[in-house]
Length: 322
Ligand SMILES: Cc1cc2nc3c(=O)[nH]c(=O)nc-3n(C[C@H](O)[C@H](O)[C@H](O)COP(=O)(O)OP(=O)(O)OC[C@H]3O[C@@H](n4cnc5c(N)ncnc54)[C@H](O)[C@@H]3O)c2cc1C
Image (cartoon, rainbow, N blue to C red; front, side, top):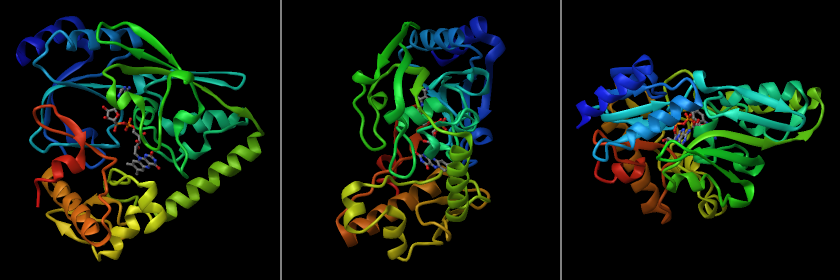
């Protein structure tokens, strides 16, 4: 069935399809075996066609991704279709204090462009890599803020390739949780409402945020940002995941070429040839040790994609690794 699906994609969208592409080439961790088919839509119409085609093959898994900055691909690869939304789907329009972005807009680019017009409200996302569709799916943000706070409406593509719009009143979200994590529809475009400030004030805020991130996070070795989510109850009682892992003496611990960053314990870095199993082992180790000492079970922000196409929070797969 996978071969039939690939054939159909090649017939209808051949110019944006590539076969057997190693996921590690676009993985922030530089980990991942070959994806059977990679599709990179260049317009919302092509994205809609790709989604419709992918839904005609029930047995063939597919996943829409942005930059993969929050993804752990299996070293064995992915026997399915990856639909990657990136630069080709990144039109952005600013009208007054309203900002409209296609799902592939690069997150830091949004704050940069908004700062030019002195628009304030989402400076907190200025240092976050990835695409706006991925950030919305994760309800990502920084400084305990999240992107959905400023979202007016979102255009989604359903399994028939049709566009449906949800407005902010339909959006129920919480810290790093969005309704799209349980919704098969794909984020195609988003509209944000910001407030008017001055270019100087917004740029100064962005500079402060970037300087603080540069000093705290490992930048030289491949990594996927924070591995574990900060649970508000745990934060109040014992602090953020990085601190809890550090207290267990796990900073610098290695499995193969994966290492708990000596700089920030909530980051796992790839020293060269780390595999998905190496990373999953370290995730399980941190989770287990912190649970033993504190009673808090840390869940992963990072998503793991299995060879057969199951998508889950990485700790769910890691449970079998110790
Ligand atoms: C160095 C570093 C620092 C980071 N710092 C932060 C931070 O401060 N705050 C924070 O919140 N995150 C942070 N992250 C995590 C990550 O960058 C964000 O969550 C990011 O914006 C995800 O975007 P992406 O395009 O890479 O999504 P991906 O990793 O490609 O995808 C993440 C999930 O979203 C789904 N998805 C992606 N696009 C769509 C779409 N259009 N429609 C439906 N589903 C979709 C995917 O299927 C997947 O499940 C960091 C990552 C790194 C590497």
